[in-house]
Length: 156
Image (cartoon, rainbow, N blue to C red; front, top):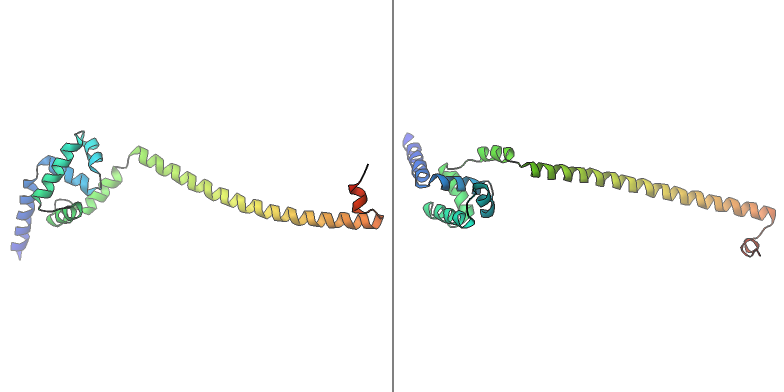
């Protein structure tokens, strides 16, 4: 029963020792969802250097794309998701947090505008109704006094 676990631990150490420290660093950044350009920026290395590291990692782990790389790295214990989630939450940049706050403020403003629009529509319909009532009242007064609308419109 311990033999498969020991074999798996041996595999893990074989894979992790096969990768250089920089390759493991690049692998972790790939697992976080960073692009090659972002990795180059974060590690302050050239983009082509990142692509070389990525190609060597794919070759050493005998995979052909990023999805296979992540799957195999998870299986081999080279990366683990819970740790990545914590790192992801901790690595939120101040700019990202500011963008999130601005988006939340915009969402609140949009909701306030929608509410104001609904209220203004209600007021407009109430004013229209009041205008109709006022017109009817004016027509009734004019009829009782004997003034026609034509005489009002043709004043000289």
